[in-house]
Image 1 (cartoon, one colour):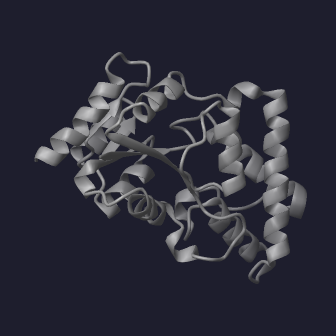
Image 2 (image 1 turned 180 degrees about the horizontal axis):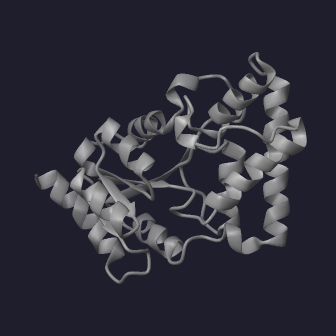
Image 3 (image 1 turned 120 degrees about the vertical axis):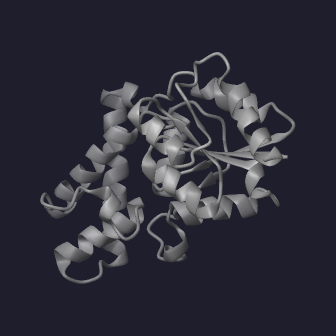
Length: 235
């Protein structure tokens, strides 16, 4: 049995840019916060929960209360829903992504799960809006401080690998779209497949990525993905 783990924003769905825009707007509308660090890679915990908490802590000069985090979460979800009604194309699945996912769901030797650093409610809505079936989802709990240290992308990958079965590391593959995804996979010893081309693909393959896909519509995308795990296991 093999396990394919898929990143959500920017990989399965086109939601990366609208997600960032609505998160920034939620901070402004709910708390009047405009000037904050937009280098998301610099935050201690790179999740909706962690970044929101750190921004509010800096703004208030104290740890945010639970009700303040709930306000940010509610406003963010509300803005995403509004954006979906006005610009539904921002929430579509990547071209060919649903068919790609279904190919693995239909295969007896594979399991598939989704990894997201977005809040649970938000992540589930994105999958639903993009037309995906119900899938195992590993993401931070909504506004919950429980398990904060383990709820970064590395922790979520480890949780998925444990929960989905006793997988050897070489029997797993993490599909993502950026350097951060690659680094999280490398930290847990899971082979990484990039959805992307060009300089990023060349750089990550030099650093040890298992390979890259030009897109879900390329003719042999499913076969190439499955072959990567087979070759990892044989190595």
